[in-house]
Length: 389
Image (cartoon, rainbow, N blue to C red; front, side, top):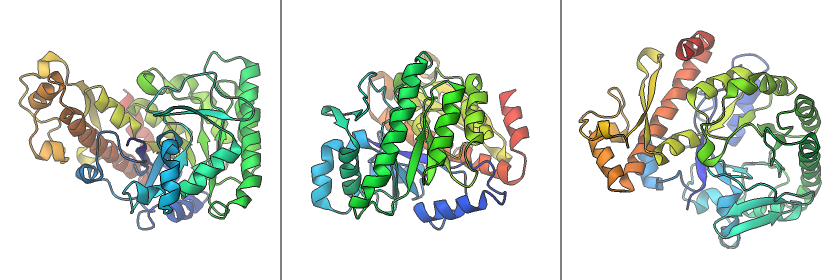
């Protein structure tokens, strides 16, 4: 079963007084022993792609908050209901909390299947149409710690203003219905809700969505419409929409967390943190692995030297070095060489992706540890500029 990703907490303004309440918020929904260590990759859902629960430990992932996508569990809601203890325990992640989201950003979602009453969610058995009642029913059996409200995020840079307004209006209507109808479900009455910020690439609609969503009693926000899901995950240059993202986030209170799902390369990640994004998922690490690539990084003295290498290239066939000289992940500690992983790729052995996910996830977590250090010491901007040179 595939459907969970580790999440990362940058919390750019974490040490300001306004941000102090975010510590308390995340302490409630995440690991109470880790609330002083943001940003951090802490979200997951079902299983990190390619990894079992046992092999996840080899990536040195500490228990925390895990992202579970509806597309991964809709087919299993009868079993979840009979199990009765929620999706975290159902998935074997007893020490993780659950953040439930609508779509899986690891995959491209077909366009044109949302309407004013429902949202199309694609799972293994095909398309499922979720209206608010069906959405709340599946949430009630998943028993999340917090969840993203149903939303119509089916817009892109080429969407018309009419379509963008429909997306915003529908998402706000879904949120209002959820706020009202969740009172009928004892298991959801006190569960925090993240409202979705829509608006596509239109400034006025972004501002309207942010203001209207903030006027509701939401716990936090998910920023929709900027990521490129699935195989297109590296086609977005966040610097192009940085001003639009910053304008959107300026309409949101600092005391509530902001989530940006999707696979973001390191340049985009640093730009998003600079805009004020608090939480990311770890799908970038998984997507790289599925495309035979590894994060070759050096975090010595909290500096960042990083290169993305493609182990399917012929030059690695005889490379007897490990992936990163200073890496202490399972893959590197056990001396699995670039040549060995290249061989696994050429022979189409799934072990190649397993080792790459372990390695990439470990380094992705180390990246956030480094970012936290610089946020804590007020050196984030110089760190970011040094990397972007």
